[in-house]
Every structure is written in structure tokens, then in C-alpha cells.
Image 1 (cartoon, rainbow, N blue to C red):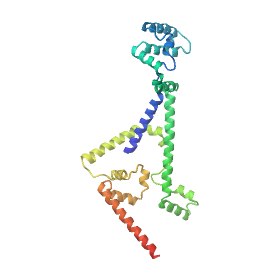
Image 2: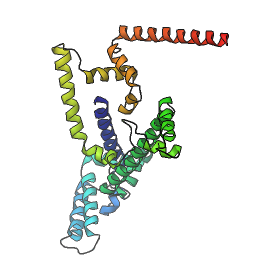
Image 3: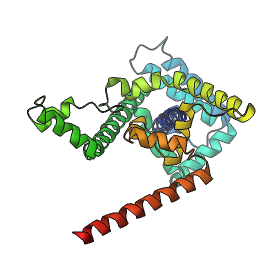
Image 4: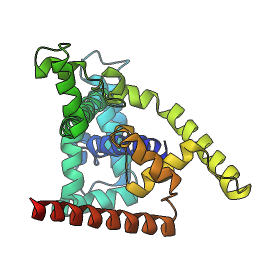
Length: 291
């Protein structure tokens, strides 16, 4: 639960950051020269700047000019006037004209980013992220299915179906075998649906965290079965429910009963498994020698 909530949050932050980077911002007058927009020289006084802007604004105001580009031209001269009528921004703009190489990164963003509308950019980013998220889900599903098929229990179940006559081929038998906790991704697992469910997932995670703190940190209660399994998954670094269900039920119960989330119990469990493995290895070696 906690990991799913954090993944959704990180994914949303990633989308927002990418959007901000792509959108960029308009640098000064964009690809136009602020002085040329107002029809003045670079050494023009502040009074001359205001006079030029006043004259052009009367000509290009959309209420008085029916030209299709009048609104855009009016906005351009308003921007130019705002830059050149302020001493600080005018000095900064003059520095940009003299040393454009110092503003290269900002210039690139101003040149390319504003050419696409905000809605188009955001839609494109969502589609790209959705495609990547979907391909990743498909890749994980195929890997997990491959691991399941390589397990002896799965092969045994397939052979039983074929021998009993329930299936005529391996492919048909594999379609009949139901793997608990493992299913192919559907539209419900897509990124847009995940983003819609994000507030619910976060609120559920916060409730779970509050329950954990109160029950186990404050009241010092013993862990319930679900939380014991969660702690075992953390110890084994299991991220998905399907990975957990791939472990045999007897082994899962043994891990929970051994309380392997506690360091001492975990080391004791590993030591016990090493001893059992060594005994099995020696027994197999003795049988081989007798033969």
C-alpha cells in the first residue's frame, strides 16, 4: 500500500516537472527586437519610448484596427513598452542584445516552447507517459508469467490437465491454469485511471499509516496477519502481490511464523535454511556414492 501511493505521487510530480520544462517562458520580446517593435533607436529616451508606444497603441488597438494580426501586434508592443520603460529590465535587455550567448538556454526555451499550445503539450506528455507506463506493465507481467511457468508446480499442473484429458495441448492447458494474483494489464491499470484514483490511494495510505503508528507504535499491539505479511514482504524486498503469491503457501506461513522481520529471527531463519540445505546436499551425495 505505501509503495503504491509513493509511486503515484512520484509519477505525478514527474509529469508536472516535465510539463514545466517543455512549456518554458517567453524571453523579452521573443524573436522580435523590442526597439524595432516600437520603431525607436536604442538610445531613445524614456519619453520617446512612451510616445512611440502611445502612437502605436492607438493604431493597433483591436477595437480600432480590424486587421487579423492587430491583437497580436498590440500585445507585442505592450510587452516591448513594459521592458523598455523600466530601467532595470531595459538594462537587462541591452545586456541580452550585447551578449546573447549568456542567455542561450533561456533563448532556446523562448524560441521553441511557446510555439505549441499548453493543452497540446500536456496532452502529448500524458499520452507518452501512458504509453511508457503501459509497456512497462506489459513487460512486468510477461516476466512474472515466465517465472511462474518455470516453476515445477506449474509444469506439474499443466501435465495433469493433459493426462486427465481436460486439455489437448500444452497451450490449452496453460490457458486453463489460473495463477492467483497474476493477471494481464487492462485499461483499469492505465496511467490516466491511476491518476484519477491517486487522491483515493493517497488518503488510503495516510489512513493505513495512522493506523500503523497508533496500533503498533503508541499502543504496542501485536501485528495482525496482514501487517505481518507486509513486514515479511519488506524483509524479502517483494514489491508486488503477485511476487508474494509465487511463494508456496507453506513457505509464506513459515516466514510469518518465524517473524523474519526481526533481525535476530531473520538471521536464525537463514542459518536454519543453510543447515537444511547442507543436510540435503550430503544425503544426495551419499545416495550417489551407493549407486
